[in-house]
Length: 385
Image (cartoon, rainbow, N blue to C red; front, side, top):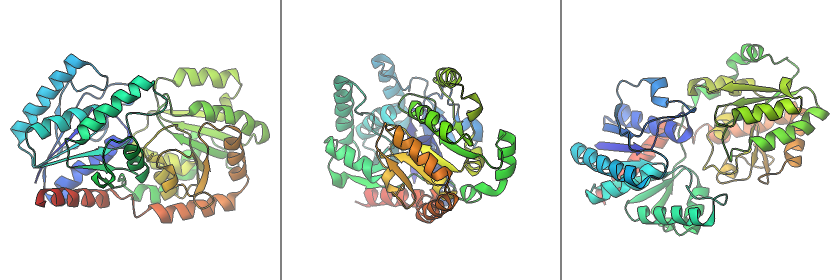
């Protein structure tokens, strides 16, 4: 079948990895004719397409398809999307992210594409926005939901959130977990000692990792606040911040003001194929974002056999099972976060048992080929209906 995927930007991120795997699997495993339409990948997050150079992935870049709301530019992007879809004549249009999801669904629906699907990686509305902004995005999503045949959620929690906001009825949704290449994470510990030496981590030190853009609502400030208490009680604990972003300088200044420079390591932007060895060097992963559909770092760490401490937001509880694969905490809590890190730091047997349970839970359900097979079956169901 002819399939067009549309996404606002192909930065190094979870939704983008999901989309790339989906496109490549459809072409390689099913022989489909696949085109990816994207806006420019600008900013500190880097370009996922430049890092991989997939020669068999057809890409169309629309410069006007940008993340911010700009009515005149958005009208141009809509016109370009409609022109591209009309030229490609796909049987399926599959959209991702807020801007591309709204414009792409509108364009595909107006052209009567037989199968229009949108993946909800994370809702564009959340409690940390102003009331007016939140209502605006909810209205946009409600309008766009009437212009697609089905909505895919990357976690059951995303369906609950969208249904509660009256975006669409529950039967309009299907949960399909975001896929990844599982094998490298199963082998994450193979270079553990050499990676830790390169990072300057001593054998008896405990390394706590966080994988996220250095950006607002990712919760780095809570981890930094908890780190003061952790280091005071256990100086052997160190922290690895994987990722880059606009808050790098502010976080660095805070760490220096507290005299914690030796305890924090910034990796900067890391290519997705190096994430497994970063996780392999860790003893646990901490996820303290305030909003996230289902952060890929959680199943990635668990597949690698590492326990996780996470704020109880969105889809986290679907993989972080309290006392079984990790520790769940109230969002924004600092004292309990410090206590959780200290507890796991002194309990190697507990870290091992939680990690192994997490591996068994996640290793099968997060493979990218399983994801693509389920998505393609959904396409076929819609087309046959």
